[in-house]
Image 1 (tube, helix red, strand yellow):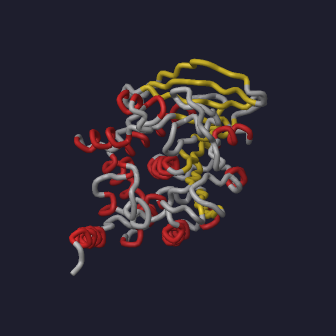
Image 2 (cartoon, rainbow, N blue to C red):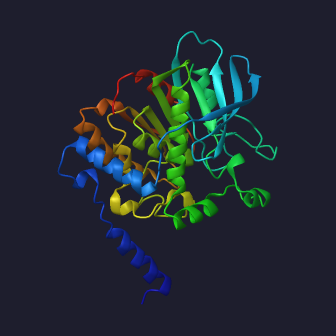
Image 3 (cartoon, rainbow, N blue to C red):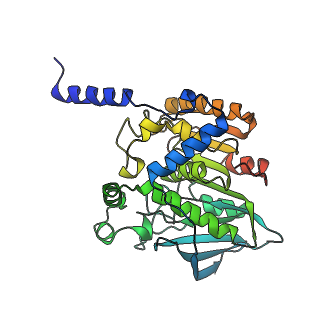
Length: 346
């Protein structure tokens, strides 16, 4: 006779097996364009993104000469009243509008990691490894880049979590948001949309060539932001893309990964399918234990069908690094340069 806890595990497996996936591309009878329209609207509502645009207040707090570029510390107040701190990187040799890259961070000390700043919000040293300083990499490639704090990290942690050194406020924010029908993931997508508004307001930015890339939790923000905001011309999520079943539903993950009814709506490869036919580089780690490579391959095969339906197979690529949960920059900047575009894919 199985143990009591085994009966509970089996019951949850049955629940997950019964998920509807009602808006999965592979269960849809209409055109790929109509599928995208319907799923994007449903996903927007499920995450309660609630973005309507509006005036932005952006304050330049400080600026530092970094040699070949300028690093600015800025604060943007978005329409819902939250102040979003970020580091902005601008190449010195600007002669015409250039592309821009939004660089959301993963779980950890926040924006300082993609910004390559080796101390956290409390001034303690942090180690930047696994090629995670991708906002700095972007500016050295000639792009303007933004490394913002996501809600729940860095300067955007709740005071008690910061004082108790809990690393993030995802649990508290997720629990509070769910109680009023909101999601932290939706709020982070909302913030990404506001950053696009800001970047498109800059004369030095080519507003048709705004890209997004991030690792781990930053990969989550990358995938969902590009799926719901077609103004992102390209996306490069690292060490997140998989199936929900093989990753965040198979092992312990942060509360901010979950939204009520997600699996009844679709799988992760369907979310990624909303980015098609825009260029996307999927980055994975061969030995990533929390986003297993078997699930990555399964999801990628499903995603290829969406790109094939658009006749855009050449716009999708998978790069697999030889280690675990890292960023893997080897293919990123070449891919973005090769697929740089001013075409409206909306």
